[in-house]
Every structure is written in C-alpha cells, then in structure tokens.
Image 1 (cartoon, rainbow, N blue to C red):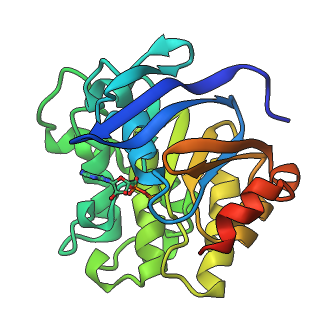
Image 2: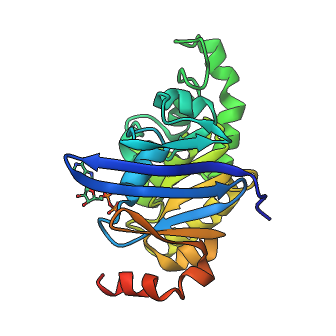
Length: 249
Ligand code: ADP
C-alpha cells in the first residue's frame, strides 16, 4: 500500500499565460508508491500542470516539492537527477536506430552519466545488460533489433517508457500513455504501468476512465485550472461536482 510520505507536491501553484490563468492555486500531494491520475475536461489545465511538475514550465507563483525539496527553481536535467522523469514524446525516439540502440543512447546521455559528456565504445557495450533489462521490463525483448520507425503506435509508447526508465526515476510522469490505442494496446499499457510502478510513484494524465479506475490509487480532477476534487477514484467519481464537470464533454 502507498506510504504516507509525499513524493511529489504542488503548493499553491499558479501559471499565467499573458493574463490567462491556466493553473489556479493548485495544491496537491502525491504519496510515495502511489499511482495518481490527473483528469479533467479538455482545457482544464492538465498539460500545464504536468509541465510545471516536471520543470518544463516555471510557475508564476507557488512551489513544486520532490521528496520535500523544492524543485521548481531547478533546471529540467537537475530535476531528472533528483529522481523525477517524464515519459518522452515519440519525437525523442530515433526512427533510424533500432529499439536497443535507442535505449543505449538514452543510457549514455549526460543526465545518466554525470560528469561525462561522451562515452567510449567500451563503456557503451558495458551498458548492454542494462539496456536488455529495460527492454525486458517494457516487453520489447523480441523487438530489440527492429528499427524504431517500424514499431506500432503502442510499441513506440513502450519504447518511450523504456527511455524514461533509463533515468531510473523514483517518480515517473506519463502523459496520456494510452492515447490513440485500441483495446489491446490499452490492456498492454495497463500491465506495463503496473509493472513500472513497482517501487515507484507514477503520475499520469489519462482520459480513459476504465484505465483510471483500474490503475490508480487516487486522482485529482482539474477544472478551469483549479482542483475540483482529489481523493480515491471510487469516491471522487461520485462527487456531484465532478459528474457535472464531465456532463459538458
Ligand atoms: P488540458 O491539458 O487539460 O487540455 P492545457 O493545460 O493544455 O489543458 O490548457 C489549459 C488552458 O491554458 C487552455 O485554455 C489553453 O488554451 C491554455 N494554454 C495552455 N498553454 C498555453 C500557452 N502556452 N499560451 C497560452 N495559453 C495556453
């Protein structure tokens, strides 16, 4: 069961875009070991909140804390080194390289090898077993030598998650991991998220409510940039204000 220690916290977070308040005084706390979904209607501010939590955007005011330490003042690569990483977009996958090469390149990136800006070939080969372990974790062992360009949409998402795992994050942020997938792909992602969540905290933005109900311990519902409700999925889904927020969808 998730412990009571906060892994990731937002404290009175505000983000304004030219006078438009996309994030409005958001305070939330995600415990260590929890799978937490951020949900809400389109335009509610989910992506903006994700960008604030991962350091891709600086808040207008408020703070982001990782294991009790403030991280919103840090650069994204420093945040990664402290144990928070975000699933990379498909564009970060190199299509002309194999699946295994993509993982090897990610493993030798500077944020994975502090104080080392290039990697001799011998070091690269030492990373092989680690790469193979990650491919096994994300279910791509048998696809290791395929070109990334030839992967299905679902397999590319698996590779993206594998690339995030090269940073061995304690907290993993997944941005709509099931988007654009059929039921088979969705089922695979559910299994994969459960697996990578062992010993980790996972925060995801997700539209598919059956995925949310199957995977998450707690959810936060956003509306107009504010927290509408936060708590266990089965409680929050019965909240009349939450039901109302979704009626307009
Ligand atoms: P969601 O992910 O829940 O659909 P977003 O975080 O993408 O919501 O957007 C929340 C609101 O903030 C939207 O009204 C959007 O138009 C606005 N917004 C997001 N990013 C920017 C930006 N860079 N500049 C101006 N407005 C933005």
